[in-house]
Length: 121
Image (cartoon, rainbow, N blue to C red; front, side, top):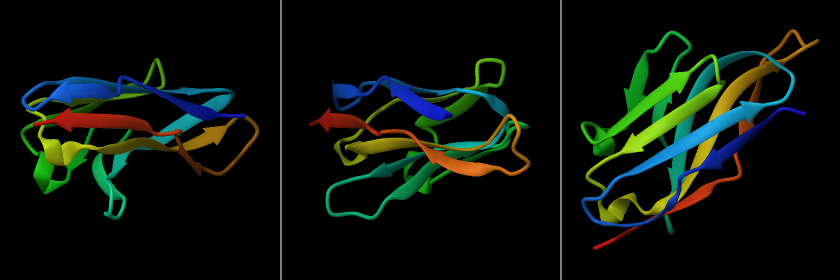
């Protein structure tokens, strides 16, 4: 079974940095879109950043200039470099990807388990 495994979350002070990683594993034949979502207490889950297989990126306005999404297609891994962190960035961050397993002709959407990012003032 294919899955997404996240790492890099933690507690940092405002102005600090974190780098999240999400590696896809299993019998994967292809990965299309990969991205990061977050859900803060009392708020809806939102798309933070997304990257296509060709490297085109999207960022929600609140993180532009501070966060950078990238991917290593050879390692089936997506990263989120988070700089100049603010308390309002505190949330559970979820990795998301459209992937196709060997023997399948269709892409399916997968979620990571979520990792807590806490930014203290």
